[in-house]
Image 1: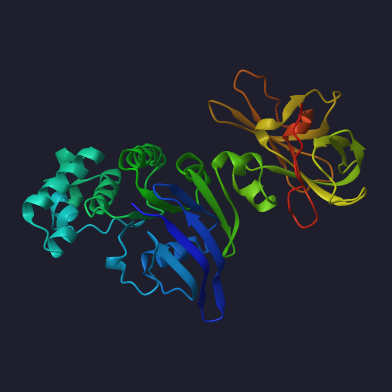
Image 2 (image 1 turned 120 degrees about the horizontal axis):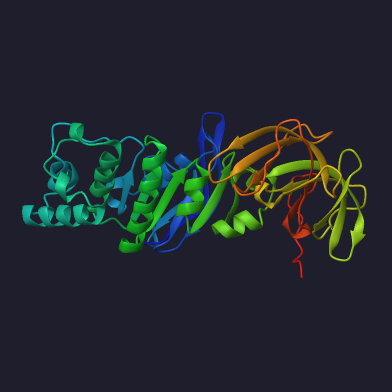
Amino acid sequence: MASVRLQGITKQYEDNLVIKGIDLDIADGEFVVLVGPSGCGKSTLLRIVAGLEQVGEGTVEIGGRVCNDVDPARRGIAMVFQSYALYPHMTVAENMGFALKLAKVPRPEIAERVARAAEILQIGHLLERRPRALSGGQRQRVAIGRAIVRKPEVFLFDEPLSNLDAALRGQTRVELARLHRELGATMIYVTHDQVEAMTLGQKIVVFNGGRIEQAGTPLELYERPANRFVAGFLGSPRMNFLPGTLAGEEGAAVHVRLPGGHVVQVAADAARAAPGAAVTLGVRPEHLRLGPPDGPGIPAVVALVEYLGDAAIVHAQVDGVPEMLALKCRPEAPCPQAGARIALAFDPGHGHLFDADDAALPRVPVA
C-alpha cells in the first residue's frame, strides 16, 4: 500500500476555480472520507488523484512518487465508481478478471486472484452469473472485487453506495469497513452522506466550495467543529443554531443573551469576542433536554413531532429564531404534542459558540 500527499492542488474549468489550493496528507493504510455538499469539488479531487483530471497547480504524490504526469494505469490505484460499469455479456468472474487479462497476467494467477477477491467479498457463489442476474448490492461488490484483483496501492471510491437503497447502503458500509480491516489498504472515499462519513472514515475531510474546512477524526469533528459549516454538516438531525449576543462571563461559563431576552450559559473561551458581540449558539438535538413551560430553559412551542421508532424528533419554534429547533426524545420519555409550550435546556459543556465570521470559539472543559 502507499501514502498519498496532495500539495497546493488547484483545478480550474474556464473561469470556474473548483479546487482552491488543497493540502492533504493521507497515511499508508488510512481510510479517509472526503465529504461535502454536491458541487464542492471532492469528486474532482479524487479524479485528480486517479489521473483522470489534469492538475492545475500543485503536486500529487502516491507512495512518495510525484504522479502529475503519470498515466492512470501506472499510478497503482483502482477506482470504484457510482455506476457499476460491468460488461453485461461477461460472467462475474470474467468481469473481475478482465483488466488482468488485458495486462496479460497468466490465467492461473487471474483465477487465483478472482477466487481470493470473491472469498473476501462473499460472492464466490456468483462467479458464473451475469450482471443482469445480480442485485444492486451484488453488482457493487463485483465492482469492488474488480478493483481488489488488481492489488492496487490505493483504492478510490466515488460515491459507490448512492445507487443502493437504505438497507443495502447500511449493509455495504459494514462490508467496506471489514474489507479495509482485512486488506489494510489505503482508501479514499467520496460521499455527500455524512452518515457514511462518520461510520467509515478514520479521518474525515470536510469540503466546501473547493476548500477543506476541517480534517480530523469523526469524534474530533463532531465534538469540536472548527466553524459553523462543519458543525451543521455533521450530525443527524443537524445542529440547532440560535442568534445571540455575549452578555458577560462567570468563571469558565460565558453568558449568551438569546432573542426574547433569555440568557444561557456556555462553557467557552470568549477572549476573541467582547461583551455585546454578535455570536451564534449551536446545540445538537441530542444534547437538548425537554422541560415544562414554567421550568428553566429556552421557551418554545412544539410545531411537529416525528416518531422514528427508536426515538422521536420534536421540532419547536423559539420566538425571534427563524429556524425551528430539533430535539431528540428517547422513546421511553413522554413526548409533547404539537402546540404544547415547553422549555429547552442543555448543559453548558454541550454548547458551541461561533463568532460573527462563523469560526468556533474554543470550548472550555467542564469539571
